Structure formats: structure tokens, C-alpha cells
Image 1 (cartoon, rainbow, N blue to C red):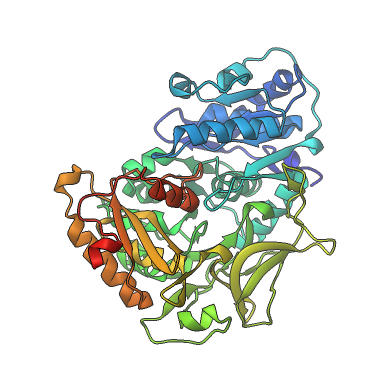
Image 2: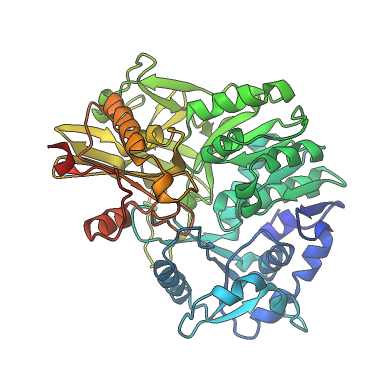
Length: 534
């Protein structure tokens, strides 16, 4: 294959099922509709900025951008609870960085979108209705995707079409795609896992291997309203491949599926994009074993935007691995197994074809992870290039390698210092998030002046006065002390949706800290501060 467009071009009759909207649509029809993109962009020759959504018109424009060989700037949709002023600034800066003067959005978004001061709006249908033909050179396609911004300002990652193509091929090789495979996804196309890992990799597999195959595409909001719908669709469509972060597994388990399902065909469930919880994988297997889910379908993975997406992945059919280790030893850079109450780490698999990994310490010791391979970025949108002359990218993630398998410990800036000890924020946040009353993925831990602060969103949709905050605080303190031996100075509970989030749906830890210090976060009555402990 000489280009990404050739890799994705329709070779066999197949379709995408847009759940809850237009239903099954021939893939070839979407591909042909996309040819209008070249005519649209030919007017200005500028990059095309898009808020990618899981809709037929958006997918057609996406495919058209790949065929036309233009630069596509992917703008994430604002998650619930996002600071609109921050999001507006984010979108404006992203467009200006790439000299994009028009943002393409879904028609339904127009009524609530803010003024972007000189950046115009258009809809997918506007683009698809462009008359005439434009110049097409697929080899010039480039994707700009933004890092999460959970601990710093988001940065645009520039990916040439050859980088994306290399990652798709290496993922497909690890998944051992075969005739009869089909995929189902609820992940947003504005996220690399949803776009590259599921849609593009999935369509490459289906159009080349499975005549009449179907890719089932939900909208993220459909999943959030009814997580069980995901598994029902996998059952109804005979899905063989799907993916989700850990929180998606946990949300699905908390809901009743509501009907008899069959998951015997599901041979791949990729988990990544955030810390992977051993408890989540185990509970999911136990919860769905009776309807045919095979524990070996779990495929934990590790990746990052700077590598297009995937770096390592557990192979289908290979038992996934977890280690329970001593947290204090990890802080010191060593790895020692521990009793069951230690820190559990799930192995993220071995490097994909063409990818290499190493840590900045020796094998088996904790160090900063470095990666090298054909899918690494061309640079950042600000002109910086983090790849060394020898081809290595330093990731800012801590981990270790054992028997060729990568274990992720956390981010370098996840190491907190409190009460004379060092702890991992990710470990604390993961265990606080396991409390039933705490909203999954909405916990933040940080330290300062030797003190530990924990903030969490209540999962309840009840009025604040109906939330038993005092009991939540007591449970949070118990979990934190049990995990770390440190009594947090502040344990704050806020209402659902009040923690500032990134455009990709992660808590903005720095913003949380700033908002708390300025008194801009309203803690529910019953939250504790240092004065409450004296």
C-alpha cells in the first residue's frame, strides 16, 4: 500500500451501521460522498478543522479529507462539565496554530457554539454539497490531534498519513484480523482510540477481509445514557472486536443489560487510554462469563497521541497479566511483588510490529518510558519535535518491562509528596474512584506543603442536600489512609459535573487546584479541610 487512502479504499461490499440515526450505510457511498471535500478545501487551500462526531456525514467528510490529501485538524467535542470559556480558548488557539479559518461541525452544534472571533462555522452537509472537483493528492494527508491537556496545555500532534498507516497495519497484525471479523465502537472519533484504533483500523479490516461486513458505530452519548446498549449491540451484530477505557467496563457492569445476550463471538476487547484496573477486567469477565465472554478476549494496551495511537498490546487469546507490587518500592525505582493489598498493575502487552520500548533505567526497574517506531509524530503544532536524533520519544510515563511486557506505573507528575512520603496520584485516584458513591473517573489527588488533597465528584444525581457527604468523606479518608498511610488534609466532594475537564474527558488537575485555591469550587457541606481535623 502506498497511501492511507489506498489502505482504506472500498475493496469489498461492506457498511457502517450508524446506530440510532441513518442505520446501515454502504461504505462505498460514504467514500464517494467524501470526494466533495477536495472541492470545498480547494477554495482556500487551508487546513480543515473539524469537531469529529460519530455521524455518517462526519465520516464521509473524514474519508474525503484522506482522499483529498489535506490537513485535518481534529477538535474534540466539549465533555459535560467542561469550562466553556476554556474550551472556546482551546478551539480558537488550535485553529489559529494551523491557520484554519473555518470549523466544520454537526448541524445540531450550531445553536450553542460561541463566537470564535474570525473563525467561521460550516456544517458537514455544507462541505458535502460543494460542487465541482478539487485537486487530490492522498500522500499529503496529515492529521493534527491534540494531547489531553489533563496536566498541561494541549499540544497539537502532527501525523503524516504514513504514520497513521503504519499504526493501523501494526494494530491489524497484532489483532490477527480474519474473514468474518466485525467491530462495534462507542468511542468518540475525536479521540485517537475511537478514530485510529477502531474506525480506521476496523474499516481497513472489514473492507479487505469481510465481504458484507458491518462496522457498528454508536454515539458516545448513547453509551453514557445506557452503557448496557454497547454489549447488546455486540451480541446482536455478532461483534468480534471492540474497545473501551476501564471506566466503560465499570459503567457497563453497574447497569442491567436487560435481555439475553451472547458474547461468544467477541474475541477482542481492547482496554487502554487510562490506568487499567485489574478489578475492572476481572469483574467484567465474571459478570459476562455466563453469556460466553472469554477472559482471554481482554487485550490491555498502551499508547499515546505522539505514537499515532498504539505502542503495545496484549495479543488475542493470550492471558492478560497483573502484578501486585509494593508502592514504596516503585517510588524507589524497584519492583517487588507484594501481598494482595499492594498496588496492582496490569501488563499492557508487548510492542507492536515495528515498535520498540525501553525505560531510562535497566530492565525490570521503574523508569521513564521511551518509544521508537514508524508511527511516531512528525512534530508538535508549535514547531517542536520531541523525537531524538536516534528516533526515541520520551513519554513522561513511568513504567517497567518484565519478560518483554510493559507495565505502566503512572505519569512522572503523578508522584505526590505528603507527610514525608511519596505516593502515586493515579493509585490514590483509582481506589477512591472504586467507592460506589464516587463518580467513575472524576477524582483528583494533589499535594502541596506536605499535605494531601483529594477532590471527588458525587455520582448521585440527587440534590446536594440529599447526598450523604459526611459518609463519602469518611469512606474516602478510610481508603486513602489504608492505601498510603497518609491522612488527607482536605477531602472535598463536589456535585456531579463540577470538576473542570479536558476536551477529551479527563480531569484537569492543574485547573482543579487553581479553582480550589481561588474558592471557585463549591464543596458540599460535610467536606473537610485542615481546620476541621484540629
